[in-house]
Length: 159
Ligand SMILES: CC(C)(COP(=O)(O)OP(=O)(O)OC[C@H]1O[C@@H](n2cnc3c(N)ncnc32)[C@H](O)[C@@H]1OP(=O)(O)O)[C@@H](O)C(=O)NCCC(=O)NCCS
Image (tube, rainbow, N blue to C red):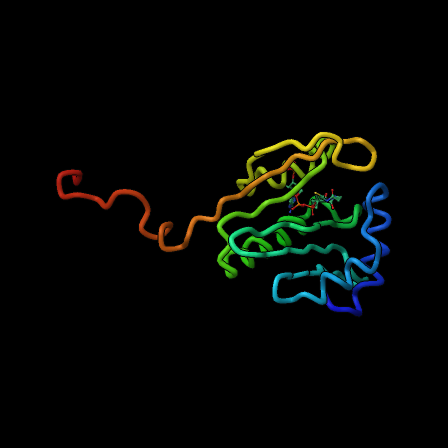
């Protein structure tokens, strides 16, 4: 996401998050902190169809926002954006990725569960309209540990 994308992103934000849309200045403030932030847009032939952002202050990365325009949902754009955010969190050596999601947003929760996020807390009445927030966490296993896996095979285990 560049500064030039902000007006279009902000217009989408107003329509997708009617209760708690970010003010446009928030996007400018976020883009002004590239040392701890990474923001992405997904583009189709007619313009921006999704956006997402990550904050990473070691050892925690936070999904700040993720959204896809309604008529392009269910085609993997949200999954692609989330994959990029998680890859970025790994590159920045985060130990965990955290996010908040509305308790009444099962579609987003399914997306996060599919990626291995688990619910760790509930913040009652976190949102302005009184809905609870679920706090979810994805622990990031260091790559070296994934490659070696658990116990090394022993001679005795071979057929
Ligand atoms: C939550 C959100 C970002 C998901 O984005 P998306 O682009 O629809 O996500 P995906 O397409 O990757 O996955 C959504 C569904 O489509 C399915 N899907 C993905 N690619 C597919 C494909 N090529 N063909 C068929 N189905 C597909 C997924 O399996 C998933 O199914 P599920 O909901 O039953 O689990 C989007 O719904 C959104 O912006 N919602 C409004 C804003 C919002 O709630 N943001 C989250 C705030 S915490």
